[in-house]
Image (cartoon, rainbow, N blue to C red):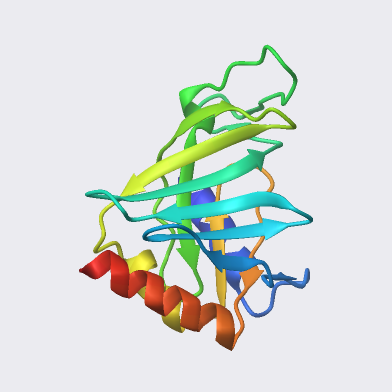
Length: 163
């Protein structure tokens, strides 16, 4: 897992060679929910309407099985091994903490992966002050830049989660 943490830190580093994608598609959802969409497709969903924070990333691709050090296919009929079913809510303010994820096939591509975190999780609490956020997996991962409006929306969301 140390390699994965090092990869996450490099991804979220200001010195990263690839510029992050601007997260202009954040929106409040019904209840205590926020969502990120791109080109009309859901990318992230954070929901704290229940006892825990439920975090989902849609269409995750190019996963790596960390236990076998083997790529996991995205094709229909592929099963997701436990070594690839991990994800972390990551920001530039806290180190990512990979936890086991549930996963189902996405109707369009890849996997829809979901993790459950405490409402006092450091990554959740860091969202209002973060410059970047990512749902870090063993697959294709990128940092999403947060602007002032995004941070304001996320601050409201974190406040709802803490009630």
